[in-house]
Structures are given as structure tokens and as C-alpha cells.
Image (cartoon, rainbow, N blue to C red; front, side, top):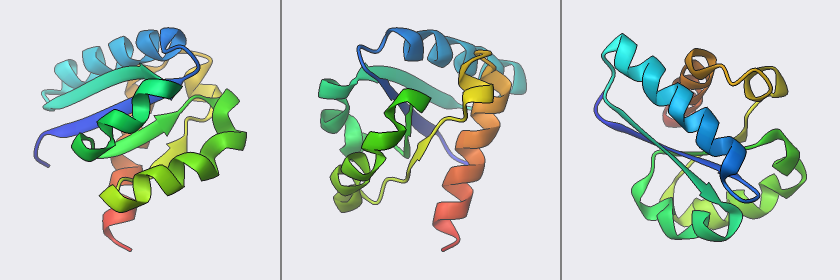
Length: 108
């Protein structure tokens, strides 16, 4: 897989910032070339043309439809990070979740 660009989004970008840091460390350990950025809800739309996936914090599950519509013109898959991953700040599992979601969206 080529360079992968993952965008995480939560309300202000704070908790997703910690999650992004953990995912970057996990990718580095695995030798995977991944960029993981965390942005606030208001910033996320501006980054959609340049990312491979948008992952939302679990508390944004009710807003997923809005983000799916925003991402559609850019063919960017959108999903909600499971609470079991987000709540434990598990960078390895987040990385797996992101890569599996990207793979599933390209095989449609």
C-alpha cells in the first residue's frame, strides 16, 4: 500500500489528537508510511480532497451522514471509530481499522 492519509475528527480535535499520535507511533513501528492528522469538525471539510479516509470519534456517530455527504465528491470513505478503540487510545487497532475500511471501500 502506498502512503496512506488518515484524517481523524472530533469536536475540537483534542482527543483525536491523542489518538492520531498513537496511530502514528503504531505505523512507525510497523514500517508503514502513514500520515494521521486530527482536526476539528469545522476544519475537516477542507482536508477531504487530500485524505484517503475520514474517521470520526464515537460521539460523532449521529453526524456520520453529514460527513459522508461532504466526503462523497472526493470518494473518501467515512466511518466511526469504535468506542473500544477510541476509549483505550489503541493506535494499533485504529491503524488496522483504518486500513481495513480503506480496503473494503476500494473493493466495492
